[in-house]
Image (tube, rainbow, N blue to C red; front, top):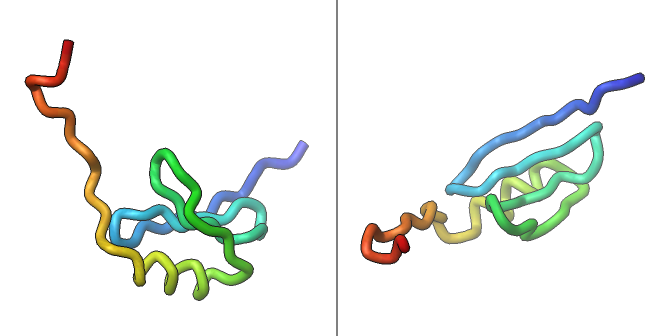
Length: 63
């Protein structure tokens, strides 16, 4: 049985990752934004996106 090899980087609030030398993906915690053949393409795409900040739940909205 083989194990999966995960390569993961973080840029501008986005995750850039590849599993088992497959395509590079640019993701948020909830969405996959794009898939690319090379790491350089994925990093360039993530760098071109606006800086992402994690959303915070306001205390008044918790029920």
